[in-house]
Image 1 (tube, one colour):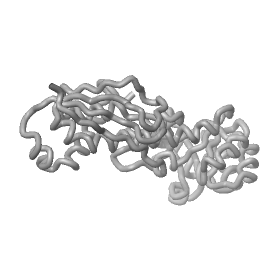
Image 2: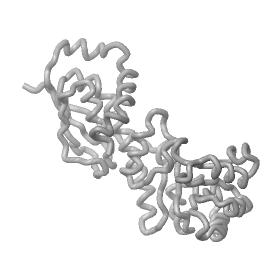
Image 3: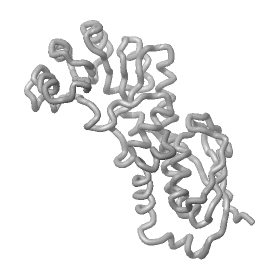
Amino acid sequence: MLDGVTMHINIDEYLMNALKEDITSEDVTTNSVMKSYREGSAQLICKEDGIICGLSVFTRVFELLDSKVIFETTYQDGDTMKKGDLIGTVTGDIRALLSGERTALNYLQRMSGIATYTKEFADELVGYKTTLLDTRKTTPNMRPFEKYAVRVGGGSNHRYNLSDGVLLKDNHIGAAGSVTKAVAMAKEYAPFVRKIEVEVENLDMVAEAIEAGADIIMLDNMDNETMKKAVEMIGNKAQTECSGNVTKKRIKEIAEIGVDFVSSGALTHSAPIIDLSLKNLRPVD
């Protein structure tokens, strides 16, 4: 969960940078109409169906501007919301509500969109052994939020960053000279607790990755027939992952082939936002 101590350690800096991007010196408009403290409240309203995600982040943005802000809601991340639903009410310094509104909504809308889009993919895999994964194709400075949203939507996270695991892609293999050499180098250098994953593009590379002792073999941009042959070749010698051209229309076909994992960059780079709005701001008497 993005809350509590974990939030303060890991994401406050991200949120502060987003606020600084929006407020370089002052919020001229807010300071024009609200020159001193006054308590107020506003309603968070859903404007289209989806999965809510990022409520703690939404709240934290306002807390960084006013530590006494309170957000009241009966919703939790992962809950289904419908157009017109009142998600909650935020109460605090009106200046904080006005100045933080856009930043807070940007996070909430983006995270809810990813969770909603991920769930559409995950629903296609119900009943199959295949695990849905995201990728590192995330928006710069949004990775913690986007990968969390994937989990809320029913997906799982691939490696978080380049320090998190060994994934030998085509250019790594090219730099090393071959699949065999790349795997050998990784085994020699990487900590023994790290699994070694190799991206392959054809059956010859599959055979070489098996022989080299790869832990996970990523079948990249293969058609279904080639992928079936690859999975048969690999058997229990390594885990399998499908990547490339993974769409909602095709994902069930991929699962039927029997791969262990299927990864899709679309979960984060192509998810549309879910429209939410902060409305009906009123002073609290």
